[in-house]
Amino acid sequence: MEKINILIVDDRPENIVALEALLQRDDVNLVSTTLPNEALRLAWEMDIAIALVDVQMPEMDGFELVEILKSNPRTKDILVIFVTAISTDAKYAVKGLNAGAVDYLYKPLNPYVTSAKVDSFIQFVRNQRDIVKKNKELEAYQKELIKAKELAEQGKKIKENFLANMSHEIRTPINGIIGLTHLLEQSELNAEQREMIALMEISSNSLLGVINDILDLSKIEAGKFKINRAPTDLVMICHSVINLLRIRAKEKHLELITQFHPDLPKTILADSLRLNQIMMNLIGNAIKFTSSGSVTLKVDILARRGSSIQIRISVIDTGIGIPENRMGKIFESFEQADDNTTLNFGGTGLGLSIVKNLAHLKGGELTLDSIEGVGSTFKFSNWYEVLDDNPENQGRTTEKLLPFENVRILVAEDNPINKFLIVKILKGWNIVADVVENGKEAIDKLRENDYDLILMDTFMPVMNGLEATKLIRQDEVEGKKDIPIITFSAAVMENDKKAAIDAGADDVLSKPFELGILHEKITQYKDKKTLTL
Image 1 (cartoon, rainbow, N blue to C red):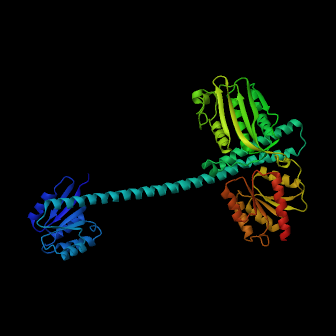
Image 2: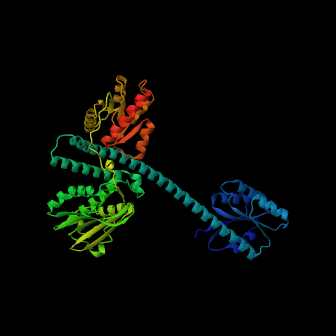
């Protein structure tokens, strides 16, 4: 325990000896002097906590000494107890307290009173020092928290910027693949080629859906995936998944079986992307862990309630099965059925964790039955609203979109594949398209020609799309500040879209975009320009 320094100031040595005898103990360090000036020096040099000061002394009395101590920031917190033989009249006590003393001891000293008072002040000093220490610790901890918060915010910003950039870099080639499939669909193809193009499109959209989840940082950190329900052909989704995975099954000589309840509705209200993810994971896992036999996708109706139906999707395999003591563990992230699973079959162990989270977010239930060495059955059940007839909403239409008349569009895009796709699409709609590779060239081109609309990529060299849009809105090209501008970008963060609108864009189109949506936007903003002329 840290010792407390107590200063005794008295012009008579015998009084000092008497006080030292009363106050001597292990937890205090006694310092004494008969000279007031010496007392000031000691108080300045040492960490004095308590001072017992005689009132009547030559050269400088106790009141003057205390006033000097209290006027100095370094010694102002010393607890001063006056020791006096003068009258106990209240006026002297008031004078001493006004000078800065905290208490009085009267001679002749009562040893019990003296000891008790000093003990109480020692405890008070210790408490005060503990508080000061705790406050310093809290201040240091607060500084660390502020620093940690700043680092976390900085890290979050870096991560968001990284994801925004990666969004653009990853989604741009996917946009190219999906765009090329759209163009190929318009060409002369035989049945086998059309099937391959359809599978390519399904694969691309499935990959795009997963990337969207990964890049949607705020929702993932909150543990929430956005559920988008739309009219869905369940049987078509099942066949699409089976067709995608059939090659892997054939490589292992496995039979892929589908069994559908005869009364399954044509269309239900569901999130087709999430259903696709669930079935892809479950069937993909079943094929991976099955060496011989079959994998069956079975869709049953469990119950009906008004316009709703409870559907159960079962994936049954004849694979390695799961030991009973591991069945609860395999739904956890990075967990496998046993320690040799990753070595023998590969994989991260994330698939079933993703399925469980998706099932929970969709309000459904995921169960497992398994016998080691015999096989496993995963069952996902959920309630869905039955839609009687919504054919216009089912999937992406391949209907030919009508051409435009007398429409000229400026396209600012630096990616060669995207340039090829956009120009090809626009020319197919009878649109005259001029193409530039950055924002500066877009402004220069706008000075030369009149356009009905600008399609402006966000990420470009020299000058990006947002900078170019701001300059156009500031009347950089005289008389053309109100031209409709649609920015398109592979970045999907909400703040990217907000930044485009804030820069002056009329609309934002995310890559990859549906042809129908692009056609609709051009129609909308072409008409807007016509109305403003």
